[in-house]
Length: 142
Image (cartoon, rainbow, N blue to C red):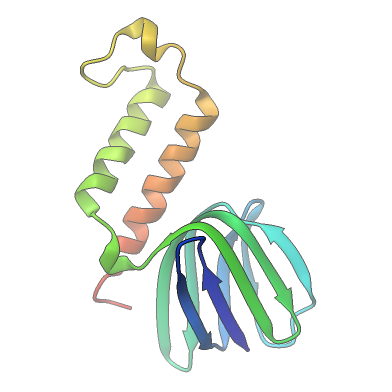
């Protein structure tokens, strides 16, 4: 089947694959050739795809996936290959998000300013950082 993965800025993947696994907003889903058609929103996470014995991985942040016949089209808000991810930056983002969720303001910010941090935004930031770290860990292995 054909996998197409693009963001508003670029096309990252256009290839034949045997399997795709992606982070739907309600959980991960897998697609094999002949899968029933569907449309879903995406969360933050890892997209993996396989052709033969070769596996590849990308981070995606939001967007949509459409399965139609023998085609999977992913239109992501953002996506990165493992080698494009700055691990140190992603780790700092993870730490900031965890601090916000724990109620601790990052250095340089007052408690009053931090008290207005939206919980959903902190959870989303943590999910993005964890997805980026997971895929970055695959650089050179996939």
